[in-house]
Amino acid sequence: MMTQQNLDKSNNKKKIYIKTFGCQMNEYDSNRIYDAVNKIGFEKTDNYEDASCYLLNTCHIRDKAKEKVYHEIGRVKKIFRFKKKPLVIIAGCVAQAENQEMLRREPYIDLVIGPQAYHKINDTILNHIEKTKKIEETEFDAISKFEYFNKIKNGSGKISSFLTIQEGCDKFCHFCVVPYTRGPEYSRPFKQILDEAKYLAETGTKEIILLGQNVNAYNNEKYRLSNLILEIEKYSDIKRIRYTTSHPKDMSDDLIEVYKYSKKLMPLVHLPVQSGSNKVLDLMNRKHTIAEYYKIYNRLKEINSNIQFSSDFIIGYPGEEEEDFSATFKLIQKIKFINSYSFIFSPRPGTVAADLKLIEKKISMERLEIIQSQLYDNQMNMNKSLENKTINVLVENLTDDKTQVFGRSEYMTSVIFNGKKEDIGKIVAVKINKSNRSTLFGERDFSSNQKVA
Image (tube, rainbow, N blue to C red; front, side, top):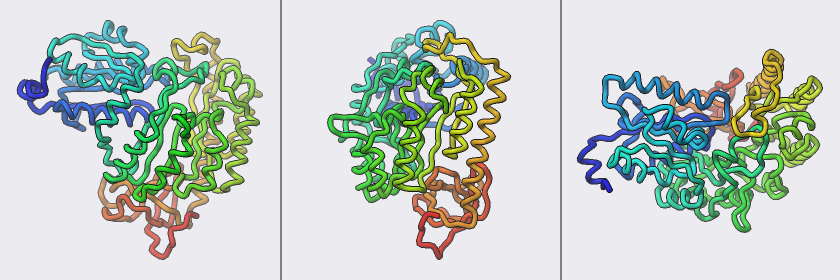
């Protein structure tokens, strides 16, 4: 077996470049992969041309995910045509779904590793270097994975840091590949999560975003997501807490009630509804109704009228008729979702919906445009309502030109204002002067008591 010492001697200044597609959980995983491979001598590089290892962390949720990987590999081949070939690793959900097929189709790929096998990545890399053998690791082993990474400190070092608490899904929505690429639901041990949160707080994190494919399904012994929120809130250095992505079926009473007591849980609830039609929800196997969704909405609004909702929408799902689409549009108008995502249905191989008859693309496109226009209006109206008001902003970094600072509102909206480098990591009062759909612009308000508008 090749040792770390031998690796260092034969491969000076090994650098790894990771390109991440998809969700926040993939971003978290990429950061943890960096933490792991650093133990065997790989340094992070942001310049892909310097890389001796090129890793693609892939997502299988959207259309043509597999083809995007092969397109990216073609680009890498051109970049390194006259240079030493890097070690090429495909990770993430496409790797899990395709595994051996990827190695057969594209000889340029060296290793394929699924999201539940990242604890094996160092041994996999070292085995390949020693034996120059193509390797595929795609077993589901979430327990071993998190036990391994619990021994390696999370080197995020960011003001806002992701923290995975739950993986996998048992819901089996008919359009979704997650149960097949991430496996069954698994909740990390309560203390393990708190230890990681504590370390993040000690190393500069001010906001923690708790992650899971079904984050509100978190259940470890007697502990739920609500317990985690209230415990993490006790860390004085943590100023904000968020969680994503939730399922309406798991929006339990204790989680709703925590909005009464928590001082640090942000008032933006990302709760994917997918459709406003009960018929389509049933076709999707979503396991919730619109009446149940409204009940959650109304209860949270009663607790705090400032709470806003964001969501995900699949438009043109097989069987969606005009009245079903109209129901979705009315739901968006009534709840006034902000910061939402909407896509035309695209079939995922291996899912129940993969072989269903598709709606004519022209119709789906027209419906998507109508939905997105309303969602954009909601966001514009929300941002417009904050103009000439003072809001709290958590400052994350300087803008690219170093002349201003960038932060986020309590609703996750980007804010740019005339702050200083010393403001990074602080929550400051900003008076909003103008806005567009995605960003608020303002200036420090030194006269404010930092109360949210």
